[in-house]
Image 1: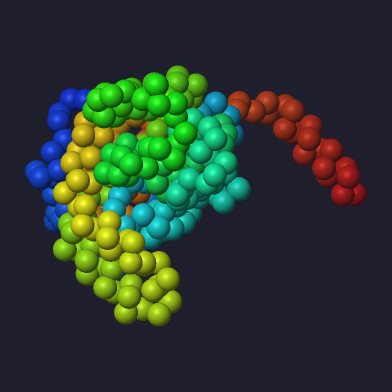
Image 2 (image 1 turned 90 degrees about the horizontal axis):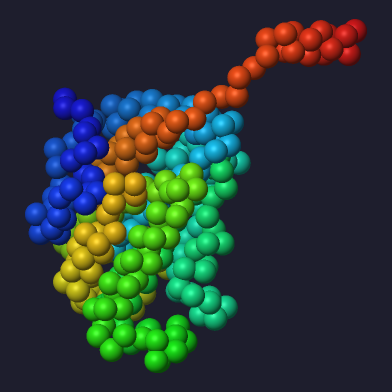
Length: 292
């Protein structure tokens, strides 16, 4: 069985991203559920060890962003991929419709509040990218942001270019301060999404996740796909790349994500603080003396 090569899913300015040529289903990297479980468990151990070094080193933090259409597997991937990470060093922020308080600030303000601290992994379930995705598809919602009319470009495309630039600068700033960002787009077909949405409606415990408004959004599928393509091409950088994950197979999706994150965590230039053997021996003597 072939090994996972993260570079085939990576976009970092070296190659253009095309939604039409990006696969949503590829050959699996596992043979069966048992094999998947073994691989994921092994990756979980490595991820935890790497995160432990990052936490002890206290210089780096990692921000992981999940973007996708509904039912693409964001929640399940977060739940399974990070299952082995120490919960005290892991934080997740799900972002939904901005509240009234959010509208009183700039469009990045509410995301600043949820950034991880050094040594921790932070996960954004949706993110500031909604500001160039959902708003791109529904530009009429811009008026809710209370931006002075004289500061809004007359040309809408100029506005999106400005926001792409703001996001890239924001992410570069975080990178230069020790917070690299890993961005995942979970690429699923409309047909596969439809099957999953129907499955939700047939499950009484999951019906609440779906509303009539969610179905109305499906009518804008082509517009969202174009928005994702433009956004990824405009904001994929060497420091903070996008990874486009084939997501019609959720199991394969989770394995690929776990592999990529493990490799990234292990690549960070962090280490455990050097210990003083003499001091450690002295502390052992103190403990033994206390217990006598």
